[in-house]
Length: 196
Image (tube, rainbow, N blue to C red):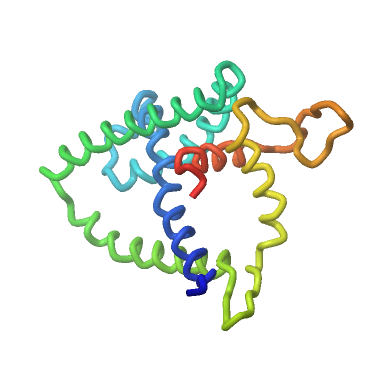
């Protein structure tokens, strides 16, 4: 029985779509709540969830980099998991508090947000999946860009220290001179999932 690459890609991309918000939203929750970012504590839960994203994206790559330098990439992963656990505990506590006073505004927003997320997820899956028709395989539209990015993400997932430049070597390790915070974050997600 032959493998269908389109279904394989689509299923793994859907899993990544489900997991990425966990590491993009939850770590920012404790920080936003602690500093009361944009009056965080007084906002409804759906607004808190949206506010966590910029806080997490702004803080976590730097913290993970520093933890990777000071400890190892395993330390950075432990920091990420600990902050995700703290964020989910705080979010769960706020969710329980919000259920007692559920407002009509959240119900009105639920359907458009759900439709947007489903359309966005479908576009992501269609643009990233390789298309298999019979015995022919057509690469995704972004395959060439991803070939470079997957090298950097793979380095962060495989090494236990902040890696050198995987694209250049003159006999000794060369520092990575490229913006790589996002790759570090995705490498930690790959490490967390075991590289599925």
